[in-house]
Length: 537
Figure (cartoon, rainbow, N blue to C red):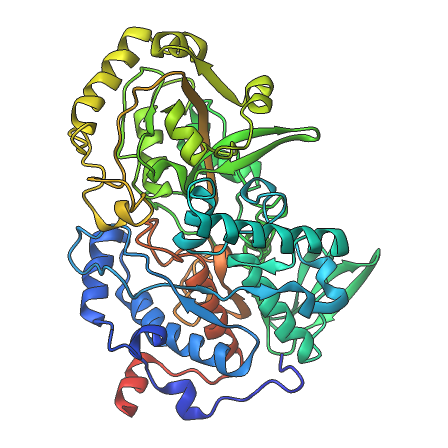
């Protein structure tokens, strides 16, 4: 549906392919399309689809330019390398951006409807900027006057906002992106209706023409002359579907997700009622995320281990007491390794282990670094402690001799800055989230100064990969491969174009925004085939 005041693309704008990330092109960093295909072939294996990668490369930069020119959405570049820089076709920098920080007060009265960030990844409700520099100041708070001043200023401003607004207002990452998108819609007079469950799709003359939804307790027929786009976030909270797709659940293990409770597969289910079907055979059903379970008065909340594993002085072991992975791999790769290491066991779990010096410097999970106290986390049982490795092993149910031997093996190399078992710190991606001030290896330090600590890690996710089968215009396809008239899907309601792989930062939200944009062009009848686009150049 056209929105009042929404800018209209010219035919040339809708049909001209663009190359590369515009935030890097100004610095002469241009994307090599062939290299992207090479990298994605290696990452996605037999699920690699050249047509979808071409569509992404055609429309992704176009979407970024459009959003930044015509809406409140703004991006900044990141310094992330590809997650597997050893693969041919990978790059050290240039393929990812993140939403620029945003002041939530710009939403006015609508700010109260914006979902707050996951409690466990904030500090007193304060969000961290998407950069190593921001976190670095917090880690160096007690060591550097510059960092101390930075943290003091950030906290003072945040506490003022808490007192006045009841929440932090300086938004970062996904929260900033959601706020910027919402503000763009509100500025154009678009009504954003929340708490409005959709019961069914409306079909007329063989075409999807709207939905039946419940709004303010009333059942309403909402017409959509152009069609319906399904983008309800996938099925990470659909117990029945994840039981069928997650291998660790099939062997009786637990799963604990930080994904919002509303992601229950409703969009996919609606698509199936219209004749759509789900993709099959992906090597991974979700973007795996190792999490710990943080106790709160109202229940446990997941803490996603995004940063601590990369720092020097941490190792992960299974119930056998043995390491099983390069702890500085991406969360998805560590999760996949954890599932594989625990295959055939009753529990899919691991223990993140560090010594006293390490956790006072970096924290561990929800436990903050010095000078924040350890006592509350020890008393709640979230954090385990032992004066010796043997004592710690007995507390967590791991064989003491095996753990002691494993730590000794690790320490023999770690004292020289080497991980002789898994090569930790040997890739640019490992080092990116390590401690640049720690040498000779930003990811490796021995575990040797007691007391020792352990945190139980279970499997979580950041969203699901299987979804409705679509074409490169984001149209939902029926079992015969034909587009269902009036129905599109994007985000985690559509099958991942990454083929169940996790090649780099932003591989869910990037395609979600790109193919949402593609769906809008398709609805308006203003998208060209790739052959026509190339012929026009």
